[in-house]
Length: 480
Image 1 (spheres, rainbow, N blue to C red):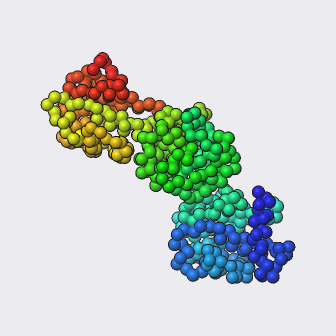
Image 2: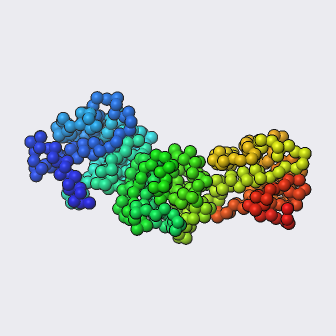
Image 3: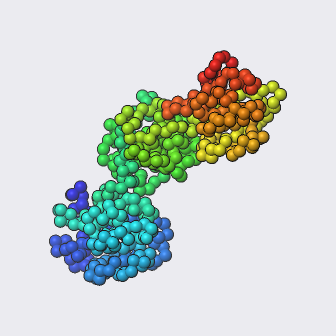
């Protein structure tokens, strides 16, 4: 890496020949601005950020000596084809008028203000001094032990600004530890501690696919290239359609990929690829690992969906359990079993539900469950009854309900509620539900969701679960 940095610095010095300086005479005053220009030129700027000006506004905060040097040695140079205009700012509030601000050895107070994203949104901050990237600067520039200029990047600061450092910056510079960096390293470790089924895709190269690109995937590609994965070379591979998933060993899914997840979620077993979420809530939506847990309690660094693992034939190493937040409910599997419970049940004689094309399934007081069930119900190819969802918040709103899901509610008083609604199929998701008269219970465990059919309650209400449903579930209390 030191040799690479030397080559990079030599490349930076080539431009000095036009100014009458040779590389062996170049000093710190000359090198600093030219290296800075090279760094700025390898950034992919946020769309529209540079378009409002005909010059690149490089500001120096309260340092006229630095300003003079920058103006002298950056004359005629450009950033993104815009001529560089160097100027000094003395007021912090002027930062918004700059594309980039250079801070020469800022005080702790100055650093705290400029590194605060609530004060500086899009302007790139370059600070002179070792360790300042770790404190929040986009780039810190400093002289290292080898007497060469070195630089460090804060990738999370770049994410906040919308600017993307080029791959060469990530390769040549140092990258400060940050949540993004920790996530990328965690992801690589999770892959290494996961075993694929023998019938899974065998490839000469480990392809971790993504539909979205950005700083996270750029850095992930960098660290994957440094060391083999499962004995194979590894890389990030951008794909554009689900038809390309046959090229993948794993897939990163983000908030923008929810519809992709909806299309593939019931193919987890046949796909045989590792699904890695990078957004809140994706663990219970069916990915195998999610890098952003809902609550990071007791050093739970990621979410682990054991049921998704079981369905896909994947096996996480047992050591991962100590640092994982294990998902309690896999909503794709939960929704499919709920759908089957309603679809393969015949209502009592005299009730026209079995002849109707539509069945209204109501969910009681659980908006989050409703949203998840609604999302995955749309992914199921419905045959037979057409199930429509409705969210109700009061027991008096059951008039339009043919089936009612009561997830995790108090059982007190529920017996009377069930008795008053004899034509409604009651489904719960909790223990000891048979005592209050409900017909079905979805028993949720980390590795399995079981449909319990309560024989006496079913007979009493007159419902008839079809043979396919009896085979899917567990009959409690006798034979149907």
